[in-house]
Image 1 (cartoon, rainbow, N blue to C red):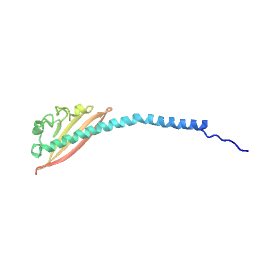
Image 2 (cartoon, helix red, strand yellow; image 1 turned 45 degrees about the horizontal axis):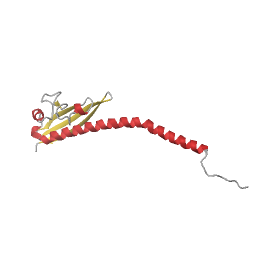
Image 3 (cartoon, rainbow, N blue to C red; image 1 turned 135 degrees about the vertical axis):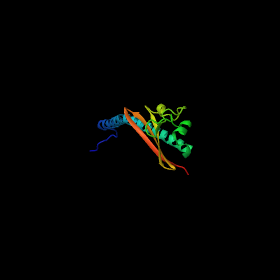
Image 4 (cartoon, helix red, strand yellow; image 1 turned 90 degrees about the vertical axis):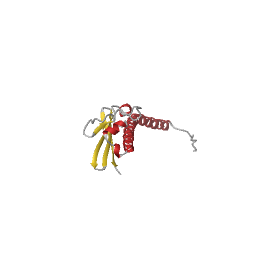
Length: 149
């Protein structure tokens, strides 16, 4: 005997395909909030790193002779020539245009510049940017040496 077989999709195949689609949708929906949080953290870290790099390059740009608290304050690169700790100065509110102002760009953002005389003609400058991320403090620190050539 010859059987006629119709081509088509059975109910079991349709249910299996629907199960796969729903499972994939649930996986995507479950990972989207995690990805969003990770993206937010990375964005804050990029902003902090960018602020630290800009500040460090601005200080390098004024030259060895001007890498002292009085001159950096005159150039608007630190808030005040008065140290907040040993050889450490704040630049949290130094940018009046708010483009490179840690307190305006980052949540609870604070910037510091540490100046250390390493040798007679060599200064180490360390720029740190600290901010709050979900009640946890995060920090970026970059340093360079500036020589009197």
